[in-house]
Length: 415
Image (cartoon, rainbow, N blue to C red; front, side, top):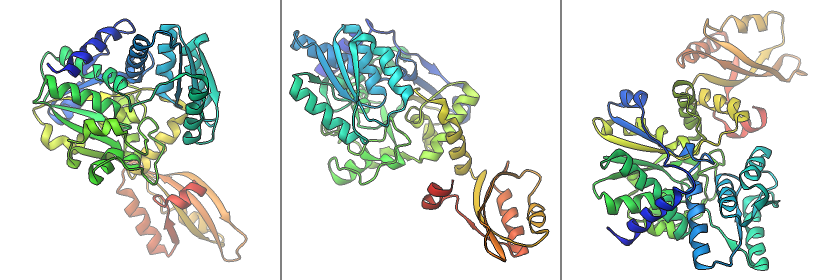
C-alpha cells in the first residue's frame, strides 16, 4: 500500500472521533432502472450534510500537529466548506474566522454560526467571492492566522480520500465504477488517488455542471485554465478554475471520462430523488446520479457507486428547481404572443389549448397598440408533444408568437 493510501486510512480513523462512516446504500429504484447494482455513498448525511467536513477536519488536525500553538483558522466560503470548518473549530475548541460574501443567504450564515458556536466569527465582505477571498487572505497575513483552503491543499485532499476508504470497507470488494462530482477537484483527487492504489481495477467517471466545467477545460488545455463565465446554480461545484494541486492528481484522466450535466437537467434528478426516494440533494449532490442515463449502456450488470456529495438544499429554491425541471423536460414553455385587439380574440386563443394544457402565467407587456397587444404567456402541459399540437393550431389561426423558453436574455428579464 502506498504512503498516501496509508495516510488516508489514518485520516479515516481520526475522523471517527467526529462522526461515524456515512451509509453506503444500494438503491433499488436506480438499480432496477439501469439493470445494475447502484450504490449511493451518502455524503449528504454527515453532520454538516456534505463531505467538506472531512477535509476541513483533517487539515486542521494535521496543522495543529505541526504547529500546536496555532489556534486561529480562516476560510472564505459561502457554503459547505464554511460549515465544515465551523464544525471542526468547535471540535478542536479553536478560533475560526469565516469570510462570506455579503450576498450569502441568511440560512447559510445561520447554519455556519450554529455549527461553530462561540468559536466562530463570521465576516460578511465583498459582493463577489473573489473579493471575499482576497479579504480573507489579507486578514491571515495581518493576524498570523492559518488559511484553510477548500480543495487545493494536500491535507484537505487526504481527508476527502476517506470517502474512498469507506467505500471499499463497506462494500467489501472493489466496485466496477465510481462516479464523482467535480468542483475544485478535492473530492475527486482524494478518492481516485486512494482507490487507484488500493483497488487498481476500479474505473472512474467525473461529472461537472455544464456551466462550470473546470476539469474538462483543464484536460483539454493541458492544465488549469480560468473559465470566462460560470453558472452559479450548482453552487457546490461552480468553480472557475481547477486547483493546481488537484490538477496534478487528476491529469491522468481522459476528457471522455468527464460528463457535463446541464443545470436544468440536474433539477429533474433532484426532484426524482426527492419525490421517489425521499432523498434531499443539493444541485452538486445530485451530479453523480444525474449522469447515470448517459452511462446506461456501459453499466448494465456492473457495480456502480455514486457519491452524493451534499444535501444542503434551501427549500425556498424548490419553485425554481421545479420550473427549471419542467422547462428542460419540455413540459413548460413561455411565449410572447401578439394578441389581436378585437372582441373574441382571447376566447379564440383559449380554444387552442388542449385538455392537458394549463396557463401558468398571462401578462400584458404592451397594450397601448391599437391593433395588437404583446402578451407574455406561460403554459404547462403533461406531455411534451402537446406543444407541437398547440403551436400548430396557433399557426393555422394566424397568431404571431415567439417561443422564448430557451432565450436566456429575454428569460432573465421577463420570466
